[in-house]
Length: 205
Image (cartoon, rainbow, N blue to C red; front, side):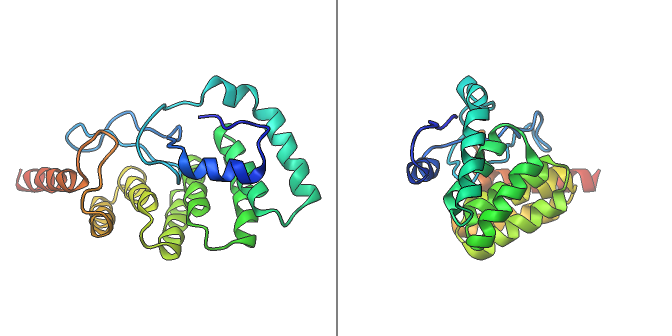
């Protein structure tokens, strides 16, 4: 999961957009039918590792120090703020990541990827309502942004215990991508059908 520390900010940004990464937020148990969920970084397309590679941790301090210096010297460098947020994301420094992403968003308010990553950090910081706000901003900025829609459903289901709202979020995801898949390889459509069936059975007790 680590990104090389000696590339230019632009190269890091391109690499961030192309690598498939998973955050450390994989949930141990699914809410319905044994389905396992994870909440993703903005550039995730499929699940890979559930923890950072050793190099990400070992080189994190130097990377952060370099990026902090860059943001001090060039505070208008939006990519440096993004990469600093990513470095704090990878090292589980939630509040610092949120602050760095906030700075990036002051320079580029409609970056759906940054908004989504910030939402993940809010969720990990125990602020699910703020996470939902960030995901909604990402969706408003890019209505076709699938990861923000998927993550919104995760937070609604597991953190806010609002199953109906989670289903609605995922149904809206299907409107964007009818063949969207869960991390376990199940189609979102099948997952929703399964959840509704479970709810009906529980309601009919």
